[in-house]
Every structure is written in C-alpha cells, then in structure tokens.
Amino acid sequence: MIRRAGEHALLVETGGLEVSHRLDALLRASRPARVAEIVPGPETVLVVAPGADRPALESLLSRLLEAARAPALRPVPPGAKVTIPVVYDGADLGDVAALSGLSPEEVVERHTGRELVAGWLGFAPGFAYLTGLDPSLYVPRLTTPRTSVPAGAVAIAGPYSAIYPSASPGGWRLLGRSPVTVWDTGADPPALLAPGTRVRFEAVAGP
Amino acid sequence: MIEIVAPGPYATVQDLGRPGYAHLGVPRSGAADAPSLRLANRLVGNPEGAAGIELTLGGARLRFLGGAWAAVTGAPCLIELVLSGRTTARGMNAPLWVPEGGEVRLAAPARGLRTYVAVRGGLDTPMTLGSRSTDSLCGLGPSPLRAGTVLPVGPVTGLPALVVDAAPPPETPPDVLRVLSGPRDDWFVPGATAALCARPYLVTPDSNRVGVRLSGTPLRRARARELPSEGMVAGAVQVPPDGQPIVFLADHPPTGGYPVIAVVAPACLSVAAQLRPGDRVRFHARPG
Image (cartoon, rainbow over all chains, first blue to last red; front, side, top):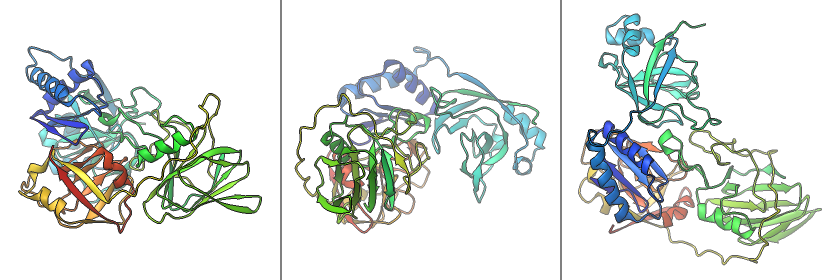
C-alpha cells in the first residue's frame, strides 16, 4: 500500500526491512524526477518529492515495490560490508551478561558472531539501528539514560546494536568502544553506515 | 561583518537547510519560515537560499562593521537604526541601507515568533554538509548567536541590482492550518481527524524549531502496539501517547515512532512556524 504523507510525500509500505532496502536501492539507482529524500524504515520507505507528478510517481513506486518483492527477478547488490573493531570493556558488559545469563566472554562471542545489517538511521546523524542481533542479547534499555555517552561507544538495546556516532545522551547498554569514526561531516558520505550496510564486529585488545 | 550586540531570546544563522541526508539521520533544518527568509533575500538581491539571521521574539541588536543593504521580514517588529547617536525608525519588508557603524535594533514582535534579517552578500559562515544552518536537534552547524559573535558577509559582486523598494506587507494569515489526513489516521479512533479539527489548540511554551507543541482535545489511538519507526516530513502532526499533537518544523527528526494523523499543507508551514506560545490554532482537514 502507498499512503500519502502530505502534499509532497508518499509512504510506501514494504512490510519488512529487506524489501525496504531493495526498494531504497532501486529508487537510488533510478533517481526519479523531483525526489528529494528517500528514507527507508523497518516496514516503510518515505519518498519526499515536492512538485512531482504524483500519479506518475505512485505508479513508478508500485512497479519498483513489486520488483523489490521479487528479488530473484531483480537482484539488488547487497549493501557494503564493514568490519568494526571493538574493545569490549564497556561499563554495562557485566550487567548485560547477568541479564542474559551468559558470561561476559559469551556476550562478546555472540555480539561478534553474526553479521548485522544497518536497518535505518535516526536518533542522531549517523546513528544506525543494527538489526540481526543474537536474540540472547536482547536486553532492556537503562531505566535512567546516561547524560553523556562518548562517540564510538558500542551498545545494545532491545533487538538492536549501535555505534554512537558522536557524544550524546543515551540509554543503551554499553558493551565497548570502537576507534572507527562512523560520522564525519567532512567526509562524503558523512555516515559510514547507510541503510543496508552489513556490519561485523571484531574484538580487539584495547590500550 | 556584523557583530551581534544582543541576540534576543534565541537567534541562529539559517539558510534553506540540508536536504538529501534524511536517510543518514540528518534533519533538513533551515529557516523555519522559509518563505520569509526567501523574501528577505530577494529584497537585497541575494539568491533565495543565502544565509540570514533567524530571530525568535526579536529583541536583537546588530552592529554593521561595514555598510550593507539589509532587509527584515517575518514576524513584524519595530526597527530602529542607530548611527552616530541618532536613532531613526525603519520599515520591514524593504531594503534598508545600514552605513558602517550603524546598529539595527529590532524590538519584540507584536505577533508572530520568527523575524528574519538578510544582508546583501549573505552571511558567509562555515558550512556543514552544504548548509550554514544551525540544527537545534542534533547540533550541526554553528552554536546559536551570542553577544559578541561576529558574522562575516559574503561578496556582493555579481549580485543583481536592487530593484524593489518594498514588498507589499504580507496579509495577516489566519491561524488555520490546512491538513491532509494520514498517513496514519487509521491508527486513531474513528472521528479523530474530526476531533483534531473541531476545536482550537493552544500553543505551549515548550515549542521550538523541532515542532509546535499543542494542548487541547486529546487524540485517542485505536491501536495499542508500537508503530515501527518511519520517515517523517515537515508539517507532520505527530501524536505521542498523551494524545497532544506536535506539528513538526524544520529541525524535526527524520524518523519517528509515533503515528502521524495528518500533515500540514506546505503552504501553511509559515503559519505554523510563526505560532508563539499562548496562540490558538485551528486545523482544517481537506479531502486528498
């Protein structure tokens, strides 16, 4: 279903993240006229296109959505692969281990053991919600968020993991820190992780 | 160069923002009342997207360290030019020559919230991701203006001559926001859009560049589950669990997890951006 989001935007319901990512990639490849923003979400893709011919855009989106739902017919190259080194010395590693009934070593094994996928970005510039986390690591957010979490902090909350792109308040549980810069306004693109980017964490010894 | 002698309650540099980065979590930002900034720029012969100053509730004093053409638009306020101890009144919506050493004083507006000052040549402050705007949500761009901040002005060579004496004073817009239902009106109880439009809402003091926060008839949800995060547009009328709507402005988060019952027409975003705490505003739904 394609819903209107005001006069300038359409919200395409994809039903799932994989289809959102394929539709996002197809749209970025075809760059329809007047499209200013393409914003994938877990079950939607928002397309902002001021001044576009709406019926034409709507029918194009329907066609692309169909293609995105049939990946065998129209394969979309998978997202870029990134390896993120992490020093697993986070302040909440022990609590996460206790909450999940694992040892801290097992928490690290499970956090590094799967390839995660950047689902969508939000909360802060460059902040990617990484999906595909091992379900044994699903833990609630902190009841009282920290007033400041440093840039590079690697954290989990609910079914997601993330790397804090810049210092900010935060309520996720900290597993460690990474020296990798995930947000740099001087770089193009400024964010290391875009929707669809595949992420592997790797444990490294810290200074 | 322009020295901020006093910024008033809250003042920032704004242009037309950072389009194209929403999928990376970056708000569009830019002037909350973009048509007013565009008009101010046209009046001084700038490209419409040149950076100017966005004042909140006026109250600013700007000293021009070099002579320049300026224009003031948006929320109407009394303007005085102080030069060598002499004070003269000046008008809104017209090019205004400020000689070197002149100080422009802007009083608090009688109505409206945001006043714009454009300077011929545009403000030439550093850019972040292609824009000079201050993003109040995530801190991109420069800090808000403080007393003592000095703003460089760009070159005026090559700009078209000033051809307009004054723009017609804009009509006082009615405090009505036209909305298009959806995209998530089906998350609310039947009649919720009618309830949104039935009685005026009061603008609350925690409103800012992110959104206009309203207080009035609560809008009740029909679904208890959480909405998965989805892309948001400027003008979105987002409804948190307390049922009190928020109208998103320039610094709105690019994604959000509360359902949007309706979206304000782009033509009414200026009206929304000029609402001040204590104002009452009505919604008017029109068929899609």
